[in-house]
Image 1 (cartoon, helix red, strand yellow):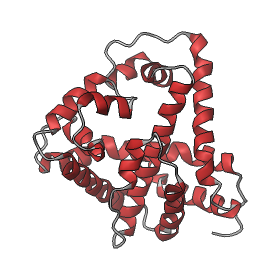
Image 2 (image 1 turned 45 degrees about the vertical axis):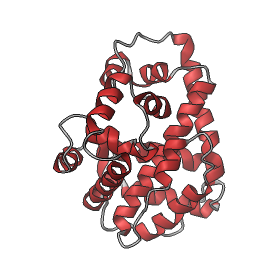
Image 3 (image 1 turned 180 degrees about the horizontal axis):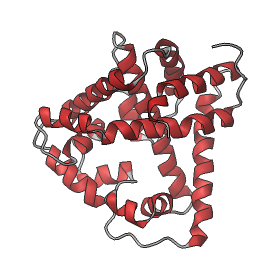
Image 4 (image 1 turned 90 degrees about the horizontal axis):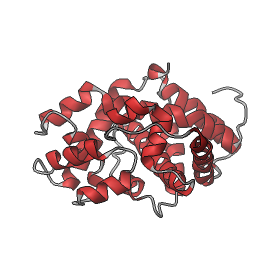
Length: 251
């Protein structure tokens, strides 16, 4: 990789957080992902997304799923989880979703990226995470990740790291005195928050915006112990690898 600049912990987090999030979003919203669900017997809509992504929680009630994932509103989660329930058991749905994650990665991760090195560094981060109070991340970390498919495994690790930051952010939002709905409305606006399942969300008072900024800072602080396990050189390499893996979808 040449003589790359050595990177501090919070600099690395700032560089990789958005690409990891957005690359995962591209997978979740892709019609090819929906087609995997349709092929597995899920009805059109959010059944595969909800049952697959949240299936790592087991046969939970919709209220528990809503509480654990937090940011998606009940108008999305409730019909999605209930529509997916008759199709297959939660554990099987999660495995099907993981397979879709890997399949998507094999199509969209560039072939010139050192996925083996990414996998080593990403797994070091994942292994270092304290999963207490982060059940969705814990469930995805426990999902098998086949060694014989390094490109697919790289995509699955991107998904797991995305779930870690999302779970940390939910905890940070609540600690900062915001509801998940308020955080989504601040971040996305009223119209988009409605698209993500929040029925008729009201605009959020400007006085709450500093709380959201504080939640972003707290999220970084919760992730810092993971990145502290990498050397400054490894953090530089990881940021470089994330940029290469996700470059096809960067704006």
